[in-house]
Image (cartoon, rainbow, N blue to C red; front, side, top):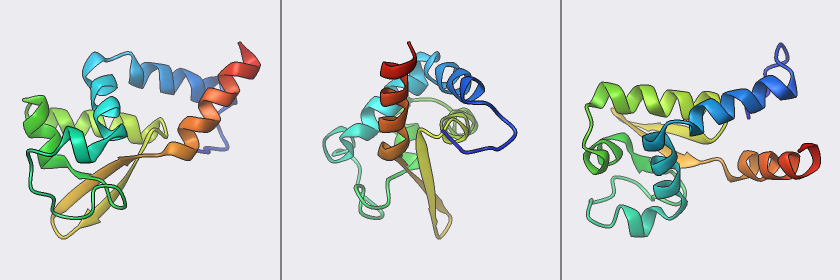
Length: 111
């Protein structure tokens, strides 16, 4: 979850749940958990574990328009579930495991 000082922890959780409420965004997050296996059919532009998966590969696997995938990835990034890295003209995404771990721990405490 991004640390926006103007939002409360509950608001951050709401953003996470909104992001995960879309089945395609949830599936993308699941794919990014094991990028070497889930994107093996695509030639990597950069190290998938260190840098992430190219947005064009996510788009190809999902079978959706580039603009849709870009919007979905922006939602996941705002929720703190993924981070992005730009390499040349390509944006790569990977899971933000530290934020996901904090979310899981928070849910265990608060719910």
